[in-house]
Image 1 (cartoon, one colour):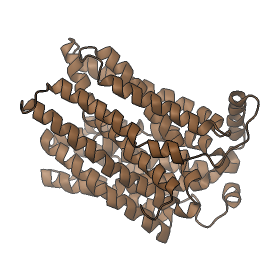
Image 2 (cartoon, one colour; image 1 turned 45 degrees about the vertical axis):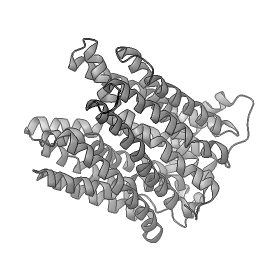
Image 3 (cartoon, rainbow, N blue to C red; image 1 turned 30 degrees about the horizontal axis):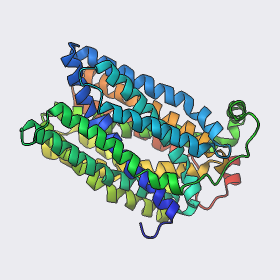
Length: 424
């Protein structure tokens, strides 16, 4: 950290800040809290699961559709920081509301959650795009990787505190009910998110921009249309996005379905939480390692290494039988999960025209969001047809092979000028 500039440190700390939301609200605690609230209200388990799926799909779809439009507008001077702050406030305020809405009000909880998803997704569009403003192309691999590493480390602290509160309340060691302990976890998440975003708000500014025009909203739409008309000029960029769509779908599917996969193997909830925690811890140094190796061997080379490791993961998953096997699989995932995500972000940042970074990171967001569709469907269909969860996970190997083959056709951007890259 001492070798980074103030702007780089402040940008990296936002990963530390928002990762608490990722693990506590979207993954670990709030889904269980919502299911319990819906059950108390008399909803069938299948119905509440359906509502949960609809809420996530609608919120994700909304922010994905708006992403490139908002990005086009944010490319004008002064808008990037404002949009970031708006979505940040939206996410934090409604995360706090999760802590005060009565636990029997499942519908209000679901609406608040949807607004947190929109806030979280919206800030990430502009946060990722700020990478071009805070550092140089030569340092993008390392800074992006350090961001992911800080995110993994930062998420473990509120996670431990929150899980401890819930376990202590379950055992009646502290005078809190489990719902109240869960609400305390939501408040901790919001406060953590807000507190550690202060350096980002204070020290990071939009360096690359287009000068303001009389009607930025109309011009934002116009710019978006112009980009589509000139799509052939950005062939390497969109070729990379196509590769990214496939391989990141595989990465995200393994992340989102890991708990269900572990449960099917008979691994207890306690062991799954321990493995999840260990994965977060191990992933941090490996994310930094990927960044350093990318500077030595080039970013695309390390992305291909990450894809190869995920092919090994899919193959190993086919033979998985014991808890030890699942631990080995989790550590393999930890070795490359953060690295492949961090280098994808920095590789893309080097490809985009800096003054249009927000618009293009809007497309990046769309490909990331919609890459959560094909993988889970592939796993579910294969598992259903074969009657074997292991076969379902193995089927993801197709996504990594396709993504890797497309990535091989994308030109390496290190030491290549932007104009030359875009014209290839």
